[in-house]
Length: 251
Image (cartoon, rainbow, N blue to C red; front, side, top):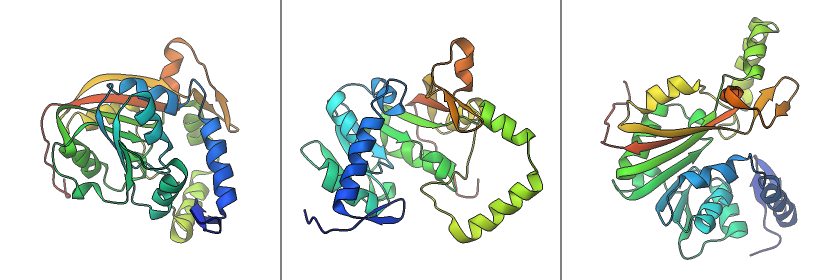
């Protein structure tokens, strides 16, 4: 590995040492019991063949590979992310990273597809879920996490401020600085998302609300109790494929 190599984090050029320091910090930051990286693996059957769809820097792929003894293929359309995954996480027997698109993968290949905080960045979530379904074996699992809009922060933000001004600022921002990897262009409450994914050849198995409640002022209540967990900022669904669902781009 060339130590003078330039990497890109969130679109910004970084040196080898800067990138290494960031990845080391990120590894430490996710080692919290409420973090999705610690919660989601328990929903993945041991020794499965797994596709991490939108693997980013590959850190979660590595966790699943090690902790669940899975063979994991991580794919991401960002060559910068895959470069970091290969250089700082590393490929090995049972763990690989690629920039290939999911459409290049054959049908009914995987036991599990995992998708962590990706679907909300897509322009066509139905087609995204269709491809997740297609590459899964019948009886395989989709384990998918996404933001939950039913949080105190989201609800209060809708009630406060000048909506016309906010929408105008968003319009201008999207013209000049839209970043698909960081900005959400889809949003669901858990019930509506469950309804969507269950029209795509999946049946509900289980869910878990995670990472606590998002409060105003960038604050979090990490360990809500009882039904207050339903207002947590993220939700994980485990869904089982029972058939292939073919939808068209215009549906």
